[in-house]
Length: 443
Image (cartoon, rainbow, N blue to C red; front, side, top):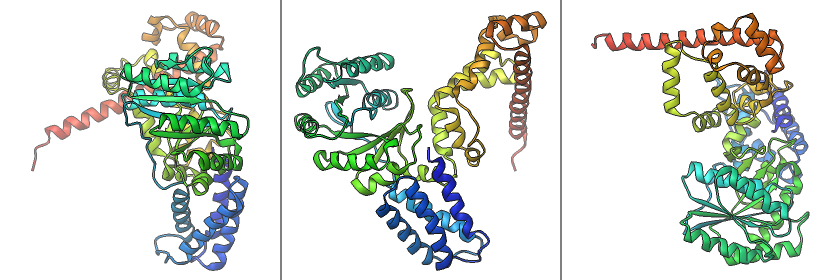
């Protein structure tokens, strides 16, 4: 996400490196490069020009502190303007009501149905709500089946009516059913078209009028760039929706939609979605996205993702096992599964400042763990518990069973033992220091 834009902006700031102060001349050169970078990212010329004008006005009107280089000051100004362009602050959805109703709209292929499932899981797991999904895409039978599969996967009921072609009637019945079953929120998945047309607009407008939803979200494929912005504008003119969802952010997106949509439509981006995993839905934080665009990473989001996946009780148990040198290969395997749930490994690594650039050309995904997982799962429970018993013949059997080489098995066992020693030392040292501090007399 934004890889090309990150590189282009970094090159733009190099123009100011070594300069004693910000001047109209060196700012003009930098902004010329920034404007080109934005245009390459599929940001409209009008928005790119206005953005650069705003940055120029701020830069020339600011005194550079002696402790701050001109290029550093320019990065700060561009960061603030990027965040402002995308909406400055994150905006939550309104799911209050009896029940709250979320109407999901967008073009066919934008990822509405998958997003509906992700949002249902989000409301259920993070907000503790009882959720119902309503299948109102009556033109594409596969959409109803897909929603049912997703609903079963996340443990959320899906309301549908076989053979009924009236989406308004289905939606109304879904809301009534949700009231009877005490659901907090109903998420209505609607039909899309291959392009904006009057029939589609009439139908979604009729749904909104009949349901009076507490939240109307427009779902758009981030890879469509300026087309996404124009489609959003057409929908908003008719629907007056509450917010935007950008999907397929893990694809080959240049970032134009994320940077432009708020300025054109005047509505906030509320979520970004990537991949097919139901957990891969993030609240859109403009300042954090600006951090990532400028290569600063996004440690806050990384920590939040870790907190969502790692159970405190499990962490305490694991700490005790580490202190006693009882950390096993099965514990190691379970930790890998938790890390994978956080999202794409390369995307997670890019949230660490400086790491994203280093890994730019490195092929890395969650499949990288497959070899390790295969080796561990080819062991017996006793071998996973006590890897020290794994002799030569056992290593050969494990290698054959996992389809890996003996060298790979040896490497994993060596790395695991080194990791276990290092973790025991770190935990032990921490415990010793804590005990010393407790015994130290107070003054």
